[in-house]
Image (spheres, rainbow, N blue to C red):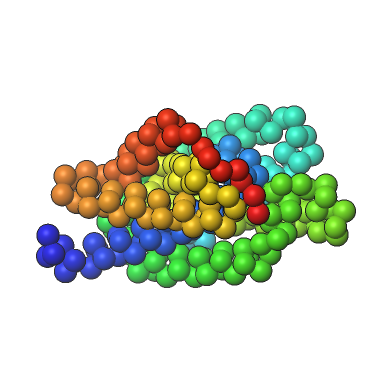
Length: 270
């Protein structure tokens, strides 16, 4: 078993799993307590349109998808703020628009690539060094922002009106969170894929909420759970010759089902 650690791709996969776990734990926890996970689903699938644009115009996939996804996220959040009773409708439109745009442009693309499957379903065993570096710097950025504005995020998450009365620019921090969520989705794209990323954003946070009393502890416990799912899923996929991302999400879903029958004993706080 120790011989597998001699392979660079396996070490990269483990490192990617750890970095993605931290990324999803931080952003997923904030998204869940702000009830943004449905919006995250729309943004995730809408990001496929950025991939189609990159293929059609032969642009850098990461940069193009990041800009397009952040743009969609801002449009969706603006519409949801302006028409709060139609949030589900806007999410569905962004979801379908991005997927349709991506498919049309890829069909018309003269530079069609056969690795499209990677962007949809992920391939953690083929993560590059460049992807690892991007994940590392993104995590450092997320940690810095959350540490620096922890109280502000707590305030807007639990009582926006009170936060506004205290002089906190709630709109700024709301859009900052939306931007970080969009960036997290694109960064995790190659690892678990656009279709499966919602599992890592939502399931560990759902389980962690049952056993934690604060946002910080929820983030930490979510990170531990995500890391377990990722590392164990990588080993499972390697020895059983299964899809890495599917193995990770299958473990997360199994844990989710088990957690349903566990009675929560803590309420979320600061």
